[in-house]
Image (cartoon, rainbow, N blue to C red):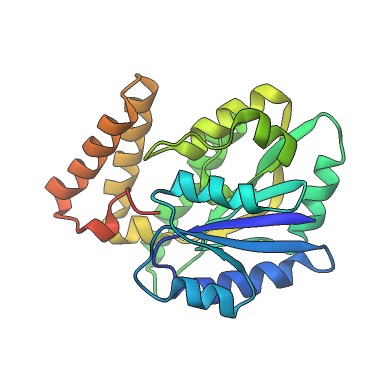
Length: 249
């Protein structure tokens, strides 16, 4: 069985589609759906339960939610899925077949954006360039982001001690450690992930901030300072409300 863990913060609007799609895309493969919530103040937990997911509550951050979900999971293989990301048909069988190979420890999926309705052709092309850059990056580095649906053997996850409890980039740091344990795979077809961060903050602005974030992290800035600086960029330049800061899940 594959355990699918979805961290959430106020995702009541996205969960019905994501949970239904995930179950359908798994086909005949056995999966369990776990929603690990970060104290949402909307109907996230109720919606998740109504759509057949196991619900865990009380996490204070995305990394904590991911680790809580993994601790409760019953499957030998773990898949970490964002609430606004759609998996390809046959994903569960592809993961099982990949992890049947003893040298493989985990991996992620190829990535593309889900096109929103009424998005202009120019903006869609800009998002396509960002997706292409991201695909080149992770294919050469094997460092994955969470919106690529990272998967891992449960035994490897436990040996690594789970995701690092940090406010930002827990996915990137986890995948860096995972690839040291063995080979990692990049599966196709691609997942389709929402572009809402880019559309809410501005495509060019978000791309620049992501690059600055990665550079600052590479230079060794502590996680707390990294989070404060990143959210400060958004507050100063776009007067962002807390709902669009990276401290959210």
